[in-house]
Image 1 (cartoon, rainbow, N blue to C red):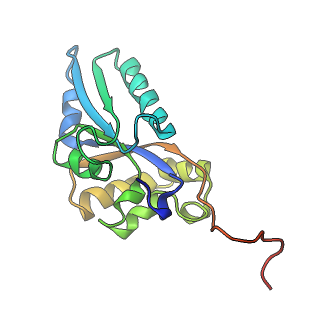
Image 2 (cartoon, rainbow, N blue to C red; image 1 turned 90 degrees about the vertical axis):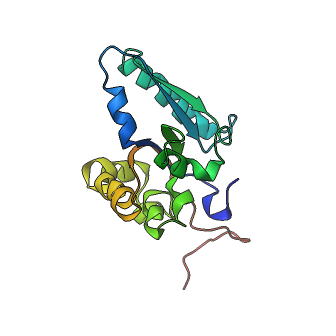
Length: 174
C-alpha cells in the first residue's frame, strides 16, 4: 500500500466536507457520519481515528456518531480525499503525502525527510495550530485544488529518516 517515499507516515488527519458540518450542528438530533481511513483495520495508524471517533461521540453527547471504516471499504485507500470532496463519505482519515500528485505543496503537510521544514512532531503541530500552517493547508485544498473540504490534523509522527545506507555513518562527510 505504501510507496518507498511513504514508508513512515508523518501526519494523520481528518478531512470533512464543508456541507456536512451543518448537519453536526442540528440541536438534539442524532447525526451519523461515514468516515473511511487509508489504513487497513489491523494497521497501527487505525488507532488514531478510533480514538478520534470516541472523542467526537463524547464531546457531542452522542449527537454525532462516526462510523469508521478501514481502507478499501468504500473507496481505495488513496481515493479518500476525493471521496470526501464528492460526498461519497462524510469524513476521511489519511496522509497528505498521498496527494502530492494533486499538488506538490501537499508534501509540506506530511512527513518530509527530517520532517516538514526540519521540524519534529511537536514543532510541526505548533506550526499548524499557532503559526498559520492550518490556514495554508485549508487554502491549498479549498482554493488551489477547489475542494469542498476542511482539514483537521489529529496526529503528528516523528520525521522520516534522511535515508537508508548500506554502511553506518560514523562521521560527517569531508
